[in-house]
Image (cartoon, rainbow, N blue to C red; front, side, top):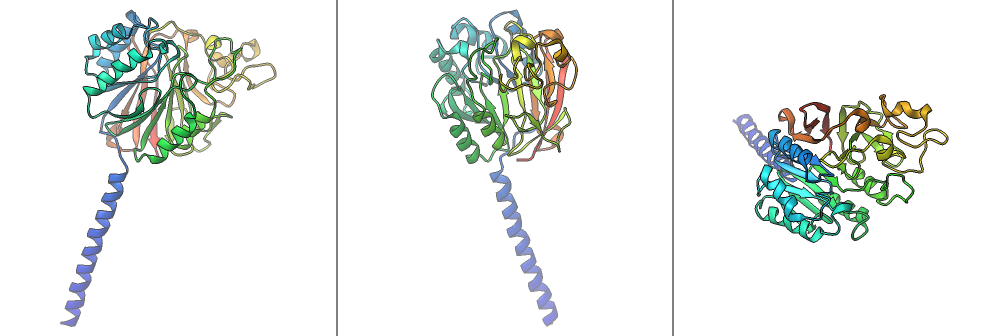
Length: 355
């Protein structure tokens, strides 16, 4: 009888432990915010208002994207009404659309920002805090976005980014801004964004989205952005990892504006014009014929850090980068691809999230 009581008591205690442990795990899962399954985001920059930019919006609609994240430079005409009307004509006037300030948006920024706020009002599930597109963070469908404007308005962006990433429980995190490290075609002017914001995003496990250059380019997984060091444990070009301390950078600047070549676009590298691979040669693609092979042959960059490039030198045309989250039902997996308006997939890769 005593033995039966002992077994019964032990069973009750064990059951209570399992229930309590289940609640503990449930609490952990609630704190780690994950995206909706199959949610798809389109990334573009440098848009303009022309047949190419409309074709890119048509592509975004056809691919079933549910959000656009725009890295600045809207219409080059300082006409927020015309720009917003173009988007509405293709995607609808209530389509979720988030953006960062670009250098060609400064003059009419208050008008553009008002249009972005109008779209937020029609999408109450998109929650944004701060100065939208300048120094702000937004959440939508389990994704966390930091939208900033280094070099244009305000300062201390690296501190802001660090604080935002330290405070979030979202596993999928993005840093979005317009300028990269180099800001002029000839690179005769100083770098403006600074590397601190890149490192802050990397340290916080956020994917980095840039514009400004009118082409598409993507790195491998990087553990040191300043020195462009590829993660030795995740060095494959098409399988990437994001976690605190490692990420990747992309430029998706084929939204519709005129195309850039590699030399005009990234001579000196996106992360600094004072770095060289070989004496007298620029960091990424260079202009010297002896280093010209980097323009067309993989691996690209000083340390093979670039996984894909697509510029006018590769006969690029316009398009967008698409990422689908919870790919294949895996909560920590995303499938991404760059597709042009001719229907050709230029780049495709998988991202594993270890945040």
